[in-house]
Each structure stands twice: as C-alpha cells, then as structure tokens.
Length: 365
Image (cartoon, rainbow, N blue to C red; front, side, top):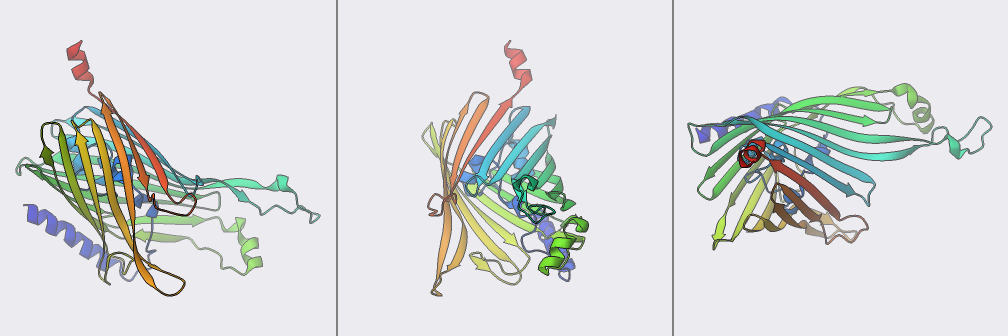
C-alpha cells in the first residue's frame, strides 16, 4: 500500500510535467508560497515534511494535522523581508471533524505596500507636483482548505490534501486568480517519521488580467511591449522528508530531520541539478526539554555563487530558533540567514500558537 501511494505521487508528477512541457511556464511561479509558515519550521530550514504536527501542517503537509491533540489549534505569524519593505503574514485554524479526520483553513499574504505611482508627477504645465503621487500595493494572497484522515488499514499512515486559491494583484494595473491541489502523506513507525508532499499536483493555474489602458501611454513612450492577458502555470514539486526522535533520559530528546525538494521545470541552481529534476536538500535539528522548551537549527538553500572574477563557490543558508509551550500557548522565534552581510538580508520571524480543548476544560470544572 505504501509503495502504491509513492508510485501514484511520482506518476502524477511525471504525467503533469510531460503534459505541460510544451507550455511556456515561469520557473518561479507563485514563489511566495515557497517561503514557508511558522517560526519552528523556518528555524529548521523547512525540513518538516515528516514532522509537522500542528496547524501549520495545513501548509507543510496536511496529513500532519492528525497529530494535533486538541480540538482547536490557531497560529499567527508575521515576518519582514528586505529591511521591512516586504510584509509576510500567516493565519491558520484547525479543528476536528471526527476522531479520524481534521480540517484546517490557512491564509497567507505577502505584499509590498505604499509603492509610489509617479505617472502623474508632472502637471499640465510640465511642473513637478509631488501631491500628484499616488500609492498602490503589490500583494499575493493564498487561501488553503485542508483535509486529513487516518488510514486504519495501515498503522501510522495518514493522508491529507489541500485545495488552494491564489489571488495576486499589482495595484489596479493587473490581477490574477488561480487554484490548485496539494497531496500529502505521513507514516510514523516507532520513533521514525516519513513524509511526502506533492505541491501543485495537477498544476496550479493563475489567470492574469491586465488593465492595459492604465499603462499604454507609458509603455509606448518607453518602447516596451504591452502586457497581454495570459495563463501562468506552476508545475508540481515533490518534497520527501525523514526524521527520528532520540530520547536522552526522561526530560530531553533530540530530533534530526532531512527533506529533499524535487522540482521538474528544468535545471535550477540547487545542489543537484539535471534537465529532468533538480534536488534541493535541507536539514534541521531540534532539541526538546519535556516538550516545553526547544532549541533549533537548520541549514538549506544550497546555491552556487559566481564571483566577479569568474570563480564559483557553494553557499548555504543557516537558521536558528527557540520555542516554548506553556499550557495552551506557544511562541516560536526564528533567525534566518544570520551570516548575511547585506543590510536587511537576514530575517527575524515570530509566530504565536493557541491550542485548546473546550471539552477538557468543562470536565475539569
């Protein structure tokens, strides 16, 4: 059964990839959905396909929703990029359907706000008038509706899926609506954990609509081609993860994890790159004290960097983090790319989580 699930996921990838081979597709379509959610996951360099076990599983691997032990699980995350220019926000909610299944809803927004629109900077007399400057936002939204269910026939096997809606806007100049499906699976055996996540399983399609009349004059004056309405396709990506928990006495445990991301849109700047698939590895390590306090570290995003003198070197992005669970409340912090020398290149992320079970509270009372 497990082999059949794996072969089915790989078969879908091969079928969809071959079916869209003759379609022009951006290599990094909907890339804002590759950033990730939850400070815990970011601290582990996103190596959580096999281990995600809270409301953020709605993003990382919906099968992991079944590891939530309370009836309600809510999480919020805020992060800033490029010295605060770009804002990234996430809100997730998960709850029970019955004893064998879970439901989750997630919302993501990545945006740059207050972008100056200088089309009307000059007035009718040719003089500069700063009062004519307007402002707009370039924002990407995603809404994920997740479902997960246990498979009783195989001990420890859980399956899940997402239906996602994508909405992207560039002020009043252009907007797009799109949709797609994700499929996930997790298998827990003793202290071993395995996970598979197939994103954009059937391809995610964004239908773009451009308001050409707003930019026609500027584009003609600058010699640029007018944009055309088009369909943007995001091809499937497969993530495979593995982790193991090692107990160290009664209070401490340590969990190493590793993920491999497979993309099928040609050569990418990853550690392993071929014309059929590129493989991007990432790894994490989490030290836990009584499942209440956590220290985390990870490494990922291996890339080959070319210097001005033509020499090439490999670069990787480390990450670190801390976490704490207190009663029904959790807080996590992640520092990504701390070795960056550019101003604003590193990222500080905080996420909050609230998890509770009203039935247990009523019984106690």
